[in-house]
Length: 271
Image (cartoon, rainbow, N blue to C red):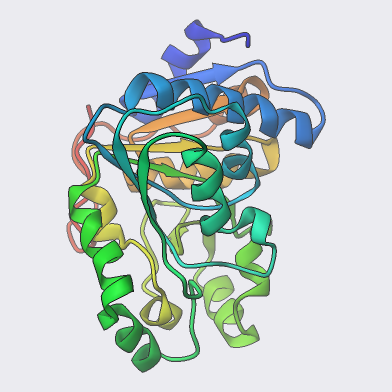
């Protein structure tokens, strides 16, 4: 795995992140995802300590991490969302299974959809003991590992999981990105759409409290989404590929200092 540390350092400053890794990547999307997954597996081996609690979202890149994962220390691995779509191999359940592998890792997952049909159904499911115990564990997270979805252009499985009315509202709000079902505009503001009340996942308020939040994402079509998520201050770290990194440097830099939107949830302070 070839890393570009100089480019990573530039991007770290540009996006106001604690840590950035840039890998060479590849032209083909599949090979690029595998390069990112290898780097993420190595990151986890260095980062996860005995007794830690760490969480995973879902997606194609995160699903590949388990194939490169060596034994992890005694720790707890939790799902950060319910399931999306019908592809089991990209679901949080299978991602958790693959990452845990043969390690002596306690796993906690959510056997429910990420979005349900009504706010009352979501509220009832959140009270279910099996689900509420996972949601409660988010307060103990030492690390969260996320994929990034692009809403515009549409590169996210969530498109197929939401109604036409949900999609209309998100389009009208000019949502650019989504991460664990949190919808983010270009300026980094989260959009509190009605669909959020039907979501079973970690919230923006909870995610901001996690000491280390790693995004693993690449591909030049996700550049604007990645820039928006960096402006939200929801993430602290990023693993991406060289082409994506260079295009991110061409975007407006993330402003220094604390989050700029006091009306929104308490954004993470910059380093």
